[in-house]
Amino acid sequence: MNWLKIIATLTMLSFFSNLKAQGYCEQPGIAEEDDDGVITFTGDQSSANCSFAPDEYTVKIYKMALCTSSPTRPTTSDTYDVSSCVDVIDSPDGQDVNLAAGSEMTLSDVTRPANGSYSFGYILMANTFGIKAKKQFTNTMHTFQDGASGNYCWTKDTTAYSSQSDSGGWTSPATLVECGGAGGTAGTYTEILDAFDTDDYSEDAIAVTGGTISADLITNANGLVATAVETADRLFGVQTFTTPVVVTSGSSVFTVSFGVNQASSLWYFEDTGKPANQYQVYAIGSGPFSTFMSVE
Image (cartoon, helix red, strand yellow):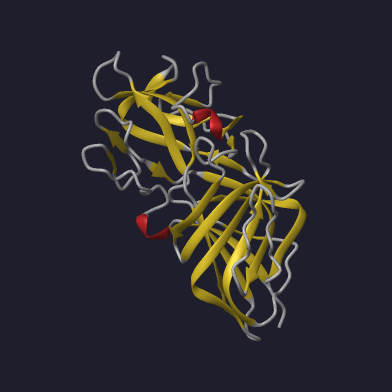
């Protein structure tokens, strides 16, 4: 039987009651999001971890594979080893996946893996994330610094490195977001993920839907983990499945789901020079995401 198609689905997981519903902006007394996706902040937000679903989310995939044993992750001196894996997607030039809530698309450069049980998978993708989002707030939100204000904020058509936010914001940042009234139109903000945190280029097993995932920011030319900001150009991720992916002679559809109900985060701080619960916003950047695979 032919391997019919691969579907990439923007999966809203169980946190959503509709296409605009909650991510993880649910911290009573700090950040709360209602069923229509409207967010309310209270007080100093330095400790808040408010993430939500973007309207669109774009990634570029180069490889995706299933593995019988866990791939060896790269280090700063040795590249990764994926000899236990079989390619499902192999796109030398990469293919863009641009999804909105509840949408799906068929990917190309697909190979049907051999029948068997696969407990691991890996993905090689660009370390860029295209985010289009517009969020409504009950608070008054100000475009950083002291720009237009209103109850909505939205992404602009621009690009920046994630490392620029490590210190809590730029001294004189480019305009990555705008705030104002309901009529504002979101553009696509492209965030280049060049560090997970200050001097941090690798993340160990993080619990996600369907297992755990680790991630390494690497340089494609040598396959090694990056050691400085603005040098990585790939993201290498390994997922350990809670339940193995089993391919049989009757398997016809391989589904890759992106769980992105937390894939955007607001970068902001309380404006102490204004009335309480007003905030300066300097970006809507990337937040946590996960992938998981299934076969039918």
